[in-house]
Image 1 (tube, rainbow, N blue to C red):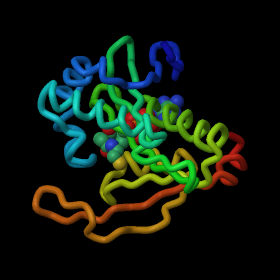
Image 2 (image 1 turned 90 degrees about the horizontal axis):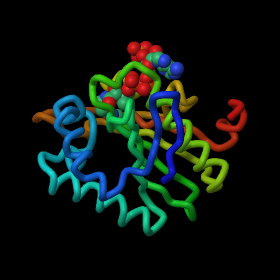
Image 3 (image 1 turned 60 degrees about the vertical axis):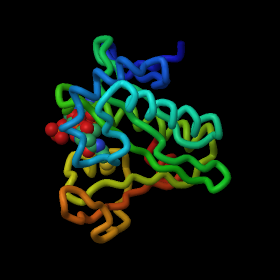
Amino acid sequence: MFSLPLRDDACLRPLEIWHAEEFAAHMDRAREHIRPWVGAAFVTDDLDGARATLRRYAERQAADGARLYGIWLDGVLVGGVMFVSFDAAWGSCEIGCWLEPAAEGQGLITRACDTLLEWAFTSRGVHRAAWHCRADNRRSAAVARRLGMTREGVQRESWPYGGVRHDTEIWAILAPEWHANGR
Ligand SMILES: CC(C)(COP(=O)(O)OP(=O)(O)OC[C@H]1O[C@@H](n2cnc3c(N)ncnc32)[C@H](O)[C@@H]1OP(=O)(O)O)[C@@H](O)C(=O)NCCC(=O)NCCS
């Protein structure tokens, strides 16, 4: 099966429907940590919900759209990265990510996103890759910055959570910038 090493003890693999039980168990460890920061549909409560997420991504991937990849650390699913959207004809995509708390602070997400961006820009001819995060999501914005993205602006009060409408930051990197950065 396809598996890309991120380092000796961590790898990136497609996250598919047959991983539903593993994904549900991971979601039990990640749920409250990610809930404020990711789309509500991604934060599922049980095995059926986990399977529905994986099915949704599989169906979109079949149409050359969104794609989902898991990060395994010491053989345990600890998070992942995704193309939230992918439109080859339009030459644009959006990247997203999440981790359970124990896997934070190790550079795994930056490496995994590097892999997705390299594929999008080099193999698929994408021109623009975007990143959307809540404006107060410091760790997420730090990843976008490490990837060489530019903060393009703010969508005001566009992210409802907990009875408050939060601002959303839009970050992006263009193909010439990616290649100029030596990737
Ligand atoms: C956003 C999120 C995925 C970022 O995770 P992260 O661990 O900070 O990001 P990375 O895996 O790239 O790791 C970077 C951290 O590892 C450290 N690090 C260690 N080795 C590193 C390496 N080789 N390369 C890069 N960073 C490294 C960095 O210094 C940084 O730590 P710091 O922020 O304490 O300085 C995580 O905080 C999360 O899941 N949050 C909740 C869900 C969420 O917000 N998702 C995004 C929605 S937009």
